[in-house]
Structures are given as C-alpha cells and as structure tokens.
Length: 268
Image (tube, rainbow, N blue to C red; front, side):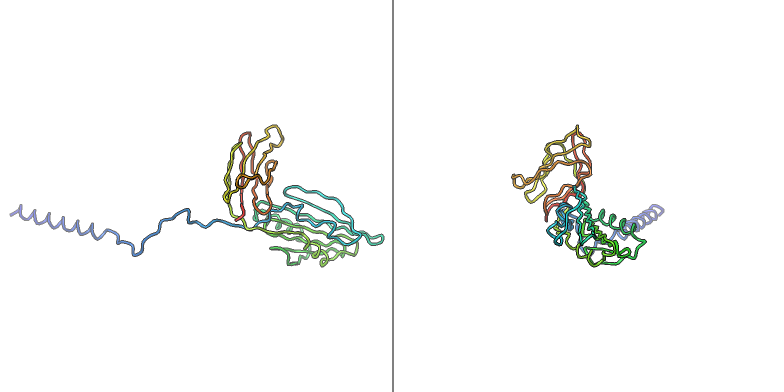
C-alpha cells in the first residue's frame, strides 16, 4: 500500500514539473525578426567644397576700374587676397580670407570662434552661405563672415567714412564656393609606402613615397582612375588633399613607413 501511494505521488510530481516546463517556455514571436546586414547600411554622404582656398577668391578683374591688387597668400587650408581702391587721395582696402577644413564640423567651430571674437559689436544676419553675420564700425570698417559647408569666409572693407555693410556683402558674394556631394570612403585609413587604395568608381590612391628626411615628413600621393594618372601631390602632416570636386582627404599623420588619412570622401 505504501509503495503504491509513493508511486502515485511520484507520478503527480513528474506531471507538475513537466507542466511547469511547458508553461515557462516563451511563445514564438508573431513576426519574423530581421538580421542586420552591414551591406544594407546607408552610405554616409556629405556636401563639401573641394576647391582650394585660392581658387575661391575673386581676382583683380572682378574689381572696379582703377583698383590695385595688394598682398596675397595661399596654401591648402587658408588663403588671403587684398585689393586697394583709390579715389583722389582717399584709399580703401578690401581684404578677403578663406579658411577651408576637411569637415563641416571643423568649419562650424571656426565660424563660432570668429563670431565670439566679434560679439561686442551688433551683429546682423547678411543671408550668405549656410550661416553668416556682418557689422559696421563708425562707417570706417565693415566686416562680413559666412560659412558654407566646410569653408569659412571673412571679408573686411576699410576706408575712412566710406565703408558700409551693404557694399561689403556685395563683394563677399564674389567668393566662389561650389559644392559637390561626396560619399565617405573611410573615417580613418592607414596606408603603407607603395600601397594602393581602391576608392571605388575606378579611383585609386597610391602612396608613392615618404620623405623621412624632411621636417616635417612629406608624403607623395598619386590619384588614378582606371589606371590613368589624374594627379599627384606632395604634402605634410595636417594638410588636406583635394582634387577638383572628386576627392578630399586629410593627412592626419606620417611615419617612416606609413600614413594615416582621415575623413576621406569621393564623389558619389
């Protein structure tokens, strides 16, 4: 009798345990879950200006008759150009400065920095580029600053009692800032000396050589498309290499055997 009772109890326990296991199992999802596929990710694109700073500046031919060209300077990231207007014994100076960056974020930081420096003046929106401001100082100095994509432009018109914001805005509009839609190839990329990087669309960037003796070190880059040479470029750390409206990349660092590129964009 006892054995029979124990057997019944064991059967009940087994049934309870089995029932609990069944009830504890999660129900199947009502919809099929999708698996993430990296190839389905949207390609990051951006609008950048790839022309050199000097190419964006107006020339003497854009100035009024009787104007003279003043001082001038330009490299991969900054260019300035001055013009002198003379009327009788009075002279006015028109000064241009163009800052170019490898990313829009850096340009925004520069624009805000300049705006903060001029915050003592009454600043007006002058409707240029992506964001802009201008101000006058006692009818003697007028300044316009605007940002478009990855470029910041500053124009100053100076002349005793003859400089005004309206004229300065007109001259600021002469700065050429054509943009291209580019896709991001890589946030960072390390290339060894002699290595070729296929960028897509038939474009390839090759590290021809690294000059270890130069101070700072220099790198020689060559850009090809479908095996045909488009351009070559020698530069140093911190500089930005741009080719037309096709390619832009910043040379972040150079060692004896390799380079690191940052924010590399190619035409989309």
